[in-house]
Length: 501
Image (cartoon, rainbow, N blue to C red; front, side, top):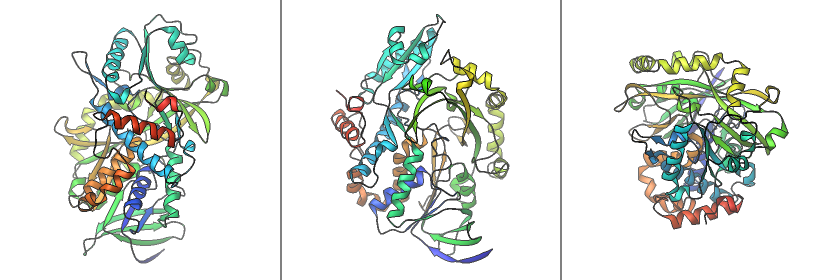
């Protein structure tokens, strides 16, 4: 193994997933002269968390995810998180529309399709909650067009596969909104990376980052092992973005920035059931989210999803949680152990003590047989047959553990977190859902924190790409309507599904 000299570049993006691809594309539009280098340890782009079989982030707009609308003790529903996530998803839609309109990417049907989003609940208390949620959301222009029904005949029209063979007299209700989408983030990542390659961005596969440190000139020096030739390279840059999915935590720790202290990670893997029977797949056309069982973590909300993968309709149910100490699907069994450092050991121990119920839940989930998983599926599809379904192991998610004012020491976080150095020279993306769906918003946040001097200068171009930049769509129904109309037309989504009346 030989060591080569220093390679200078303006920007280093670690990981060729949706986050790096989005940040790279934004920066290439804003400062085309900057030299950008992408370092990816695998052979292709979008193979870990962004891959279509590894993520459930398929258009999270908070239209159907019940964990984004918490029920307060007085029975009212807090929709503030749902509003935030929906606004952020609209930012993604606008950026993708800009890319398609300007022919930077083509064939949007290869990564986005219009699809109804639904929530479905059973039991008197849950039906009451869903009705309250519907009433709160439907007053908001972001959720215009949402319908609610507890009429079995109407539900049979909406979700025949779920309603057929249902013998229980338990009350059942659902909401439906036609402006939902299914997004294939693996396909989108590959499109964006191909676009970046065409703009002379250096995309380096089989390049594992081994170390990140500051050199005497104040630049970041990134030590990289190129597996294709067995050589070590050193890249230097003023700015580094760590977007390596579960692998980001270790790299953040190597950077030694104080903002990365007292932060740990807890890996959770997902298992889906995929339908093999085309006749069954054809009977369902929606994303249907249920309510998490008592004691289950938010990432385990059961859902029956129509997906489009390789331009073919698919049907997935899950996720069932699993456990592996790996931080990436292609990671090491020692990832969890080696992430424990003197500065985060107390945080990790506190989380361990607090999250005994989560540990117990994960153990129970890992022990489930296929037939036990089928029983859970039958709560959604009463007539489901074992031979029609197979297990698919999804990607690894590393939930952030940190000390917070609200939760105290060792609080498990279920969202997406951006950690930035005080001088903005390095940023790392940690966490999970809503993740990919809000990638454009999250990367704009990175740019605001890391390029504060340039952001005002860039604003006119950002507004060209994202017309609602700096504006609340909820408070601007006219702009919201215009954006829905234009994104529907440009992205080729069915007009009836995305244009508000």
